[in-house]
Length: 258
Length: 232
Image 1 (cartoon, each protein chain N blue to C red):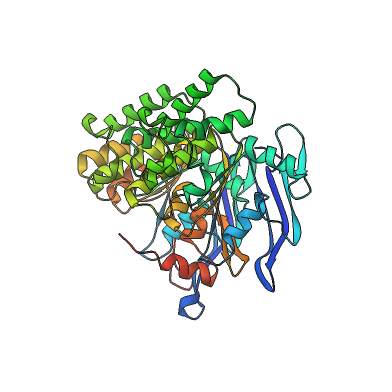
Image 2 (cartoon, each protein chain N blue to C red):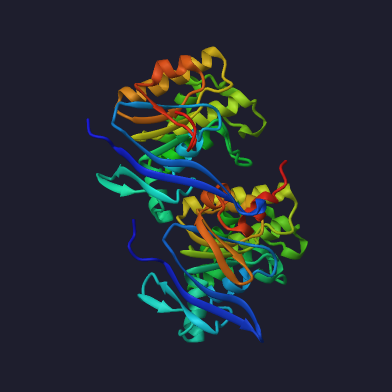
């Protein structure tokens, strides 16, 4: 087991005006771990995720990331340029709405190729080859390579966004409700895809979801948030099968059986 | 043989907040130890806490106090209230759990469901698939079903898929929760043989066996489980 966490979060707090969105959150994410953040709407999950990924500036606390090549960095003390470099080389970010994570005006192939060019790929044939390979991995027909995502269904767009994020071989992927708003059959396909990719490429990930079934399937560990604070954490099966906190017990008891 | 699993002073209560904080004491001061080649059968009436004990040993339930130590990577590791990554590593390499119920993964073929734990231990896809197919045929799952996801299988078929998945990695310590419940006699005997082979190869086993024939075939020792305050 590795002795250095990939991500180390200490006393992270974020306020919007007088309202605390996320209060005193601390945890370590270890290489190969998938951490789920669950809780109801407004509990601070997405705010926390955005602070971790450097998209929002916290009011207090720190996020340290163990980079592949430049040692440990404090995400919020990096220059904007360094942070952007990190975001497109070592990280991925899968948005709930694929339109926020894709460039809708260019082809599917270009959406994937752009990530590769951002990390220095220049050979057109190789870029197109990788793009085709990834379209195949996310089960999009190759003859759609030159089509724009505006012509894709919601599920296809989400799979394209995943391909765009993973083509550059990130070490850490942030996901905000990656299957939210999709049909259950499409959701199953994306969950299966993510599960396979996480295993195959030894990804570490932080996944925000309000769906405990998704959390059960994809995550190793869970943090439960309520009112901006982490009220319970542990192994996913511990939290779901033996919930300790009143709020977690209520959440688990509210799952509709099929 | 020296034990590979040692439990002492284990206490577990469930606090139900929806019932005004009602506390249910289930395990009180439980102690046991199991050595390689032993199969300890947990016995006691329904509701006595056998499954709670087994799930606590797996790190699925979180005991309030007590110690669960297991030999893992040639050292003793404390599992009670361990860090998640410690528990995961122990589960990946040392500790297996066979339950009655398969948690179905959408869209994944049966053979891949079974092969997955072995792949995670570093086996090649070919090795893992070969072993998965061997176990599936041993457990009487027809070959025409191997490429299908098990979601639509019968209860008994899903249970056998789950047993194959749980036994594909040679875990030194195995926890069995009614592994043969709802199986017919032929399939039950296949499962018994498979578990007996594991025991004879040196696995340390703790199990709940409702069926006395299965218990007699596998158990080397009995361990009584009773609710705190109840007559043992």
